[in-house]
Image (cartoon, rainbow, N blue to C red; front, side, top):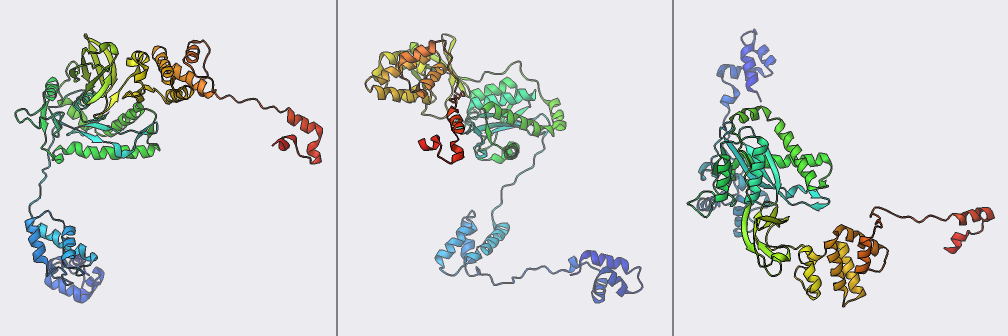
Length: 503
């Protein structure tokens, strides 16, 4: 087939060559074809006939009116759904291989007669104006900490002009996680943009209160930093497009970095956080020029960070626990019946009484969980040992697997008094050191020595140094039997050696 380029060359050569045949040969076409295009003075693409006819019989011609009627009533119907419906109503008439034909016809119908699609409008971003943030789940990357799955999220902040980004590890889409992540990003950036945009996070947006756009706590955070707040419409993630796109690219970059690293396991959360920070630094390295423009337009930070903890007042119950956020936490029994203030942070909570901090403990995720510290209640359990066997949170009273083994051993030695003996050992761990008692239990259980509270107490308080778990003692090998064997000449006579005979 002759191309437009060949015809253009022919037209050029026909002005310099004596004969048309020579010009046609040089242009790579037959003389008759050359004469045709010379006379037409048009390119092949200009005389090509549009292909509008079918080369095969349409298998859906007889039923297309039915299909089109369904599409007009329900434009969201998929071609596969319509094809399955046709196969049910006309058994044996349509083969599975004809699905692609119907898909093409439905696609063309949508383009000519279907409803209009949502239009996305490209935005022009100005430096220092807008920062977007959102949470993204990282579970699909398979990160582990010391071999254990590390299910977590990352709070992700992006400047829309320079695409500078920052992130922090968190475990829920709570206001505390949002506030700490946003403040970390702003202080790392060293300035404040004019606006901050999120999706309809319940932690920030008053979705059930039309009179107030943002929650009081989020509004106070924005006011502290002089940020204008903006939210996107519900279920319109594309309106937060910059950070949504960065979610995808960031997780791809994390996945690639993990592959290069050769392992998805980390020794600690701190090591993993350092890995992510290093990756953010690498991603931001190519944005320095645009970031420099943006930094000039940022407003200064306030003098201090805002304390964003949530404060609630609760009464300590008779079982020495309090309930916060649907979870149960223990406190010291001396606070039973007292009103205390609990300050909730993203990953911890603090208990305050009489304007003094008396407890700090990890914040539990979700609801229906509990965190019981045996030190808070052990003195009363020793006085009421009968309560131990059926205690609702008994499993929390085994600080390690060794304590659990010790309990089972004591129950085996004395079913009636085993739990009392165990509680005394647990009380010793609370008064002395848990690690010290755990080491003593390791030695006593490993040497199969008698296990009693007195023996544990004596060993813990003794000056005798307990060998660490890494110390391995190998008994010396007695080689005198082999010396005797060699001196007797038994090996040279072919007689069985004493060792083999004993075996």
